[in-house]
Image 1 (tube, rainbow, N blue to C red):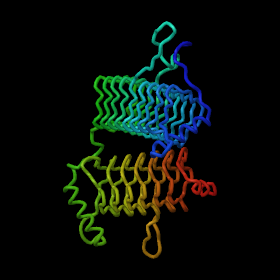
Image 2: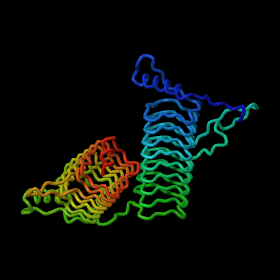
Image 3: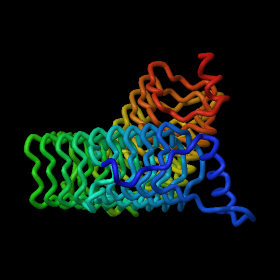
Image 4: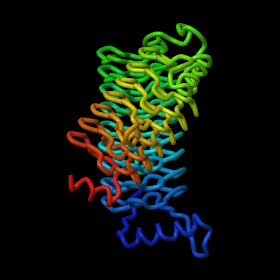
Length: 422
């Protein structure tokens, strides 16, 4: 490869100048210039938290580069060397990543909505005019890449090689992954609803707890795969048709029960039911409802009233609790991975005679959940899994985090100081 196209090296100062001018270009300021970094060697440089959206990084080497929280939306990254790169929390919406090498890359929590990760190879000519790969000698695969919790909605991975890659808790709805080599990959807890996995090699893949609702898996090789707890189209308990009366009538009766202090109507009890289809609890009155061990994956509870509700051991992954009132709610052992609890109220419920009822989240799993701006005063997170959850701006005053897993949890400096004193 001695005669093939060589990469141009840049210093950190030179790169910073290009990034600054690109930022000016993005806001149409005089002197701004789009970042053209194609065929540049940016190995081990720092680009964290910068805006490189729409930049051209074709064929560049970003080996061990720090791109944490970087904006790379719509960037051209065809054939880019991304080995061992740090893209944690980065945004790569609709980026062209065909033929990229992601070996050992860290992409935890990255937004890769609509990204193109199909196979592709960049070539150049040697001294004899023969075509050779630009990154010849490099394993052009996603082997060992960590995409835990990444958003890969509608991404295209057809034909890609991602053996032993980690997609745990990733959102992969509508992904096109036809004919991909995913042998040994970890999809535990991943949301693959509506994904196309036809003809994929998924030998020995870990699919434990994955969501495969409406997923196409024609001719996929699943030999040796771990399918424990996989969520499919099959109901996980009683369904809507098994309710005594339509859900709308049950909600009306429950509202009457709450408003009359249990003198009229009837308390809502959906314990053990699978209501993930055809139910919308947005702005609903669900105060003191019973719903332990219910399957409520992806259900919309935004702006709802859930004071003192019983949701113990519920499956609430990807559920939407935006601005919901959950004061005094019991969520012991609930699954809330990837749930949206932004701005939710999870502080104590004031009862008669100045007694209070705190929110119970002991043993709950909230990996990659969005709790930004939520009121979590005195909430009990004892033994809960909050790894990589977003707690920015949340009120943690008096919260019990004893034994909680806070690996990768997003906290602002004042929260870190508060927790360090506990």
